[in-house]
Amino acid sequence: MLLNELHVTFIRARPWQLMKTTIRILTETEDRQRIGFFYIPRRTRRDLLARIHEHKVRDLLSTDRNCMEGFCEDVQDYPEDLVKRLINKNEEYHTFFNIPPPKVAMKSFGMEELCSSIVNTTYPRVAVNTKNERVLLASVGDFRQVVQAELCNFADGPCIYSELLPPIYQTRCEQRHTILALLTVVGDKLKIDTFRAPSCCVCMYKTA
Image (cartoon, rainbow, N blue to C red; front, side, top):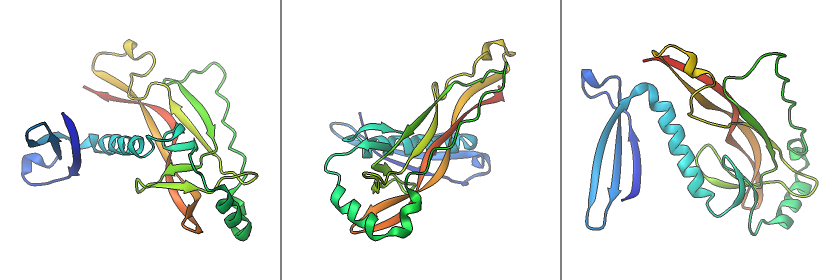
């Protein structure tokens, strides 16, 4: 079965559906198309939209290599000469380049994180913006933009030591994101755009 279209709609049709979200999923089989409706709790709306975003990012960057959460360094046919010319022509944008990544705070002595993570630093040339559009970033030669991200090692997995908690508690490692402003190349112009980047990994819990 092939997922052909995924459309999310939030409704408040009936009193007993006020805390629900409707997902319209169109699937395609060999001989017909089917539409299915599913209900999920409203509190999972943010997680659902995040997962949809991740799938779109993977599809948009499927031909690129060395990617990290929608940011890719290795890009085929990158227009280096054009980018160099635009950067040299627009000195007002030079503040976007060669900014050292922020230092990661040291862990408190004797303390341990409940969700393990890893910090990655990348100098991307293409990325997916907050509108889920694949765009070129201005990053070439001595003018490079840096993105530093903290990624969960086991996103959506249980937190460390969760087995020691009473059964009524459920835990999960959640990937958090922040919005970055980066300089992009649009046609023969430079333009500032926004991007969703991983920022930290946190342990969440709820009662069953």
